[in-house]
Length: 508
Ligand code: AMP
Image 1: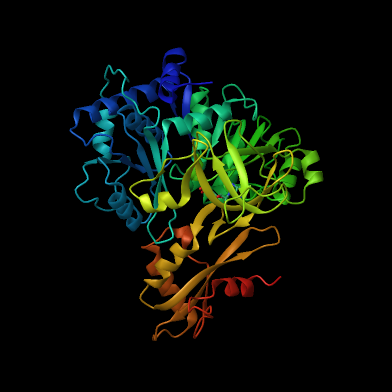
Image 2: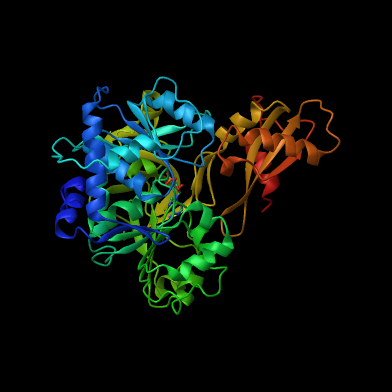
């Protein structure tokens, strides 16, 4: 059980300074480097006259400098807001406006301005990192202070910043370090999801808290199957963390198996439904490895339930359960009136406990809607539909709203609609999901009433719309297919009847 994230990580710089903490395609850095870089940055931030407690944007990709920056920011007593390099400019601008950060640290060059927010450029950052300091980390973020703020999809086109405190993160990390997972003592973990997604916290902090090594797979590699399949067998990892969708890609490579990756002992999944097919194929390829399905929203810090998917579990369940709540967390299933339902009955999953966020940054309205207090603990309306068995095992059944997961990405369809609606050739539009037999979204389809236009074909119109959308929204939020209509069906009160379009796309 650890008490302090920063102190625990810093201690490894004393006890195992030359141990590799980060390896990205053979470029390595040690625990001593991590302390030196983060101390130097914290010392520099302390000298700046920045507004107290305001968070700091950290912009970059999957590099050692990114995680050293995170720790430096936290040591200076502030939360960091990770933004991945693949974000469109508009997202960076919006996050800057919402967060009103004390500064932005550009680990790589910012693609657009951030108004009056002071910026530390990549060159300045390298100079700071390379200037050794003697630093006392005595005012790092602690207790209820925000540790990081991760922005997720919001229904209005504006992302929501989930505030995660040091106490939230501790609750999560201590669970990962305990008996429920039986992780190796000093894991060698895959670090694949971008740091702007909370799934990355699943590899980052448990690994650092145990003095292990992160093996990063940057997006340029994972986006190119040839490079990815060449890289996989070279990774000396024993702990795998990814979405099931990323695993599905890796399973396309026949050599992705225990023979070629003999050290892999643990597979951890989160973020979307783990299908029976994916887990069964993986179990065939790695018969002796342990596979865990975990579940949790960003708002409750990465994950709050876990279950091992054993051969017996594969035989017992057609649709895999999401697991049992972690010991310090109470999870329950409630009806529309907020009353707990009987075991086995569907309802909304409510999560309460020490890892539940205090809310959305500078957004009291959305915070009040989703968060509340239950028996003295913070609680969160997940919006997920599920059931609980008599022994406390939870199962996931879908959503109460129009949030979806596609390729592991969390998308509010209303946010997609917002962007579609503001595109110049679109009069009216909605995005709807297409599901496969295993309840996974395979495609997002936009139903569009176009404005009068001179495009010679629907294909040309779609091309123009997609090009526009690329500058406005995250690439993964852009619908794959566009269907053009003269009008869209309406509900009796005049709103677009999204449910009927979803039914049309997914006939039973
Ligand atoms: P995020 O905040 O991006 O982690 O997304 C959280 C949402 O992903 C949850 O509210 C669920 O809808 C979905 N989710 C996460 N883990 C699972 C899982 N193991 N099975 C099914 N859905 C999941």
